[in-house]
Length: 245
Image (cartoon, rainbow, N blue to C red; front, side):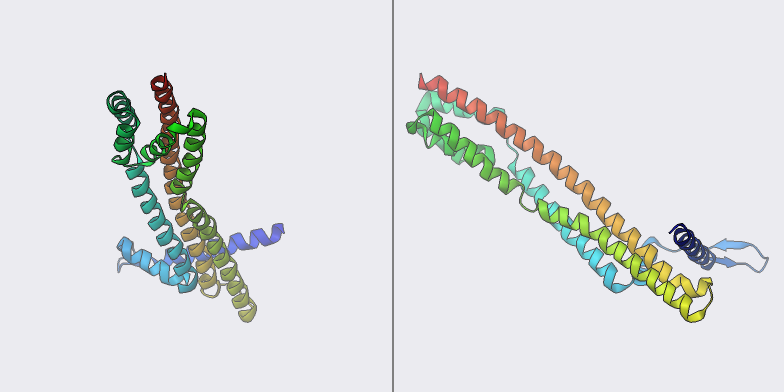
């Protein structure tokens, strides 16, 4: 097993050396001149070299993951509510117009917190215990709505590097087949297979890193909303207790 790892490392070094040599040109004076290639052209070249099958699959993981992430960012941003302001309005409405006025305030306010308040206020006549259960139950429903799509983002985070590693394995197999057919280890023989292996792995890991950062941002945003919902629900019960007396 150790010999195999050493052999693969040698192959990788040969392939990288061959790519580095190909990216340089020699001037008539014998000096080596670096060729400037635009970044978009480099990405396009690497995408083609990595193979359309694996690279397209990895790209689809990135596109779908970003689409879901952006949609969730917009949804969570619209779900944020100034709970202090909402509680003050509900308190004032309860003081002046009772439960119907408070329900009207909640009906005209956007976000899961206002929806939870509305469900709780609609059951005030059944007692505070029923109101608490209603708030808890509907809070769970709102949580599911907020978390919708998160599992798909996690899936793309997991399978993007898997496709990259699969491309690595396929590239290694191609390299060994080329070596077996030629009976020789030279950069021109093994560079193609090793290149596929390295490129697909790199792109798969890059996609996973991007989506993981996006997912962690969504989780932090979700935690803030959930914490706000829980605090507001407790304050809402306190308001109902105050006016029940």
